[in-house]
Image (cartoon, rainbow, N blue to C red):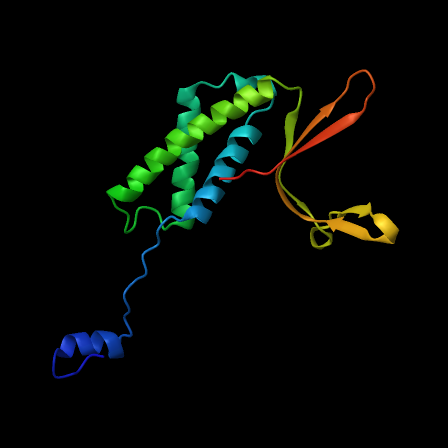
Length: 171
């Protein structure tokens, strides 16, 4: 509570102009998870073939991570406004950790015949997607719906049979 007799200007700012202290927007775990998902999606979807992704150098990957991190910071964390060296350090650590993750993903995809097909794929009636239904014991029905971080697929060239792999990132 501000008393008019204490400071006329402060009283005017609070009650006349209705100025309030700005909440600081810090990066939390949800932001970090969204940022990792965004980086992985953009890096993977930016490659037209698996070989293109697998052959990316650490330097190229790091540049892309930094590009997507800066874009995320601008769109979701008010850019550099009110940021400090601590947040810059978090972003540097994030870049290092995400590079490790992307390199692990390169190794994983190189060792399999699967290829990422869809990102942030929604399965629910509201978006026009048909939920996955499983008939259970005694007529019960299980309905699976939600958002999948990544869907990989592989089609056997001999049989034409398609295999699906569901990936849910945990950050």
